[in-house]
Length: 378
Length: 235
Image: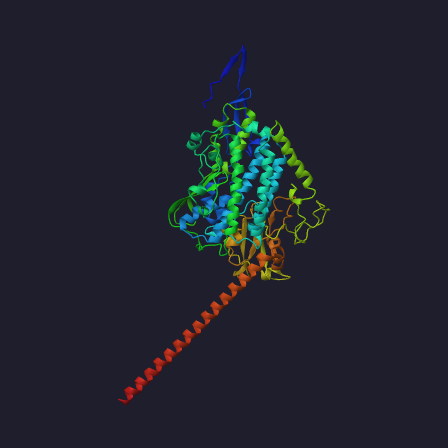
């Protein structure tokens, strides 16, 4: 959609002009320090400029000056909701450089951790999304109550709730403690019950329906051309999931479906995430049933010093395709390190989705993209 | 529900169920309940926070068995921890630390000879991110993660810079805060030590054997020489 040229419009003899509003960088709806320079005609958005970079911390250059392993804790801090999947993508990239075989148990635990992370991310995204709609508190508190149960599991396994730093090249840092799998199964088993309740709370709500349906539509073509990935792409009607396409790790062993939407509006993006949580629970059940005993660390070299090569490792993160591109030059430090952040690339279509919408809906549209500024700015 | 607003009413029913249910089922509470934690692992007066002025938490206060926040240095000694400090000031952790928050100086005796321990070992916990890389790279099992969380201080410079004395903790303390991890670590260390000693013994024996063989060979050569001489004489 092209913005019409509203420089100065005379209507009925009244001189009207556009209003420029700077939303953010400190605005509750922007999920961090992110600014939207919005041009308004009354309440309608006629132009929008996303401004980011306030949280830039030199992540990529930093990694080029330290060893491969030392960068692992920094990947936690990209998208601080999903440290486990961030770790996995980076580990996958580094494992591609030296070709370490990952033991069976570690692969299963990786899948379990990644799917638990997906639950954490989607459940809090839905909470924040309805928070942006104006449902202050209640749904978000219920979401965080469930999230906390999973974070307790993460803390037991890795020592930290959010900055897990749990994956290593060739496996995992340590095995899960005794009884952890039973506790994980308990959490997973009661999760669908919570989802039923949550759907009853939100999905029939007329206010949510009227404020999300037909709002911020992203067409299939634009989604593909702009390189959108993850639930946002699937909401636009493209059933593309790296877990199916790449089948990295051991995802080819699990039975699960890929939910996708039809219209590509905010409602579809919200529902795709609700449905994805159910599929994650399916994967988790299969993984918890099938996990074998054994080693959790492959034969990794003591000093990680890969031969000159370049590699791209990617996973289906909860927000989209998270990729790490590494160039090794034979030293213990990467020569070049680059992150493909799903949050940033999904954010690029914000203007196209917001044009012609109301200013209040711009907040909802931004919430439905699911960004974390730690990953957008890096 | 089919009438307009029915979705809102059914949502309200869920809210009501959670509100009433939270009085009977702790799983429905939206606040975290720490009362299930085992004795000695919860803030001692969790109910009355903030505590009275000057009241200190005991050493064993942690959140869970598995949590980590900042590193500490282990020693095996009792009264004088510096005699039995495990750290040998090899500076591997200082080099590997991602945010570069460790500072180590080696210790020397009067003659300028390096004694294997740190003279200065500082960790700036305002920089440390608790990533545990130092624990993993330490070849001497001397640095492990603490889980003491009462570290607030009115001074953000000196107060957050932990020196050697603040960081030194006994192995018994480590066993108290992370029982499983400490046990596993001790077992692994014992195995490694045994293997090292066995290797040393084997090396010593091999050296002894080699020396014996050498001596025997020399003796034989000498004997041969002597017999050769005798033969020559006989001829």
